[in-house]
Image (cartoon, rainbow, N blue to C red; front, side, top):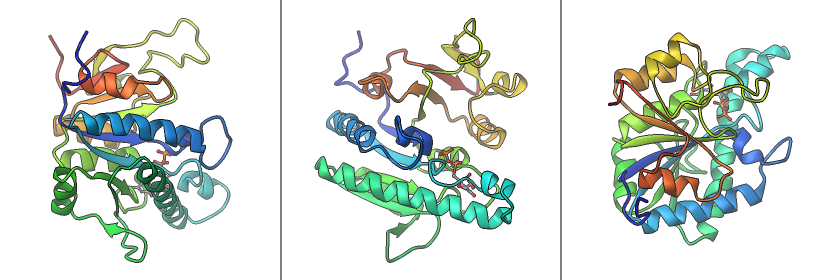
Length: 245
Ligand code: UDP
């Protein structure tokens, strides 16, 4: 077994969807989920790993859903991005209760609430051991926080992006509907695109593929998973630009 005290990755970007923060609820944030995550992030920091987090907002608002209900799409997307700010602030609060040093940085300028995202400043925070929570997605409508996560992972020079979700990896079919669905341990971004696999939206996939940013999809709810993934254990599904030997 790999020694969890020796991380394989030194700087990671963790993507948490809003849905993941909901836990067993139907809306909002389940504090139990964030407290457990905080324990794991603390464990990563003790291993010397630099941690940036991108949070989604789908537990509160999604632009697409609001547009379907009759709202102008761009306004809906602005609300979605603001929802990620709320999630980020909740996350900051809980991480600080776990004695972590945290900075929230937003793609939308909200100076009374948090810092704006400045790449060099974000990297400096990470080097100083602070957990950086990146909110507001890309700051533009018509994107997702998966695209925001891919963009930020590349910008800050993360070694890997880890998407912690409700499922334990990427399957060749929806495992909830198809009991015979098989989980990949590894696949390429092109394979995910060609087969329309539920990894991330195409914009995010293409960005990671073209910039050679590897990612892992892991089960958020399995305790210890995050630490195992960062230690290099085969957890979930790894997605890379090139085939692996
Ligand atoms: N959003 C946006 N631009 C971005 C990122 C997010 O407009 O760069 C909006 C969009 O409306 C999206 C919402 O914010 O539906 C919440 O983000 P997302 O759906 O990615 O959250 P998640 O699914 O991760 O909870």
